[in-house]
Amino acid sequence: MSDALKLVVFDCDGTLVDSQDMILQGMRAACERMGLPPAEDEAVRRVVGLSLFNAVKQLMPGHSDATVEEIVAHYRDAFGELRQNHNHEPLYPGTREAIEALDEAGYLLGIATGKSGRGLRNTLKLHDLEPYFVTIQTADGNPSKPHPEMLEKAMREAGAGKENTVLIGDTSYDMLMATNAGASAIGVSWGYHPADELVAAGAHHVANDYDQVQGLVQRLIG
Image (cartoon, rainbow, N blue to C red; front, side, top):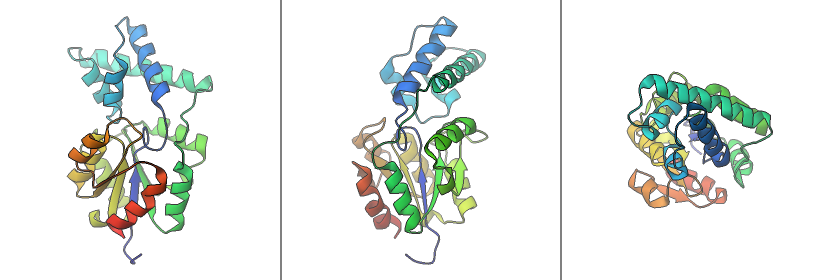
C-alpha cells in the first residue's frame, strides 16, 4: 500500500448484519399500533438503507409528517422490545474475518448507515466491532442516503481522499451516495437490492461473499 490513507466505509443493515426479520417485525408492529394496514414486506425491504423517517415517508405516502413521526416512534419502540427479547441481528458469514483482514492490512474502516446512533452502537456492541471503526456516520444529524454528506464526513474524519475511499453496501442508495461523493463503490449481493440495480446505481464491482471483498478493495484503491 502507498503512504496515502485508504478508507473502507461499510453500510450496516444488509451489509454487515442480517436485520431483515427484526426490521419487518418492527414495521408490522408499528403499523398495528397506529391502526394502519401493514406495509408489504417487499416494500419495506426496498426502503432499507434510507434514514427511518424517509423510509416510512416513502412507505406511507399521503400521511402527514406528524403521522410519519408517530410511526417512526412506534417502530423504534418495537425494535427495542425485540432486542430486549433476545432477537438479534446476526453478522453475515465472513463479516468479522473481512473486517479483521482489512484492519490488519492497514486500511482505515468506517460506517455510514441509515440507523440511528443508538441503534448502531447497540449492534456494534453486540458483536464487539466498535473498536475497528475510526469514523461512524449515522442518520442522526445527517441527510438520508443517497446524499453524500455521511460519506464526505467520514472521509474528512479519517483524512482520506475520495480517490482512496471505497463504500461497501447492499442498496442502490449506497452506490449513489458513493458516486455523489466521488468515491468508489462495491455492492454486495446478499442484501436488499439485486446486483443489476447496484451496478446501474454505480457499483464498480459486486461481491458475492466476503471472501471477495479485500481483493476488490485492493483493485479499486490499492
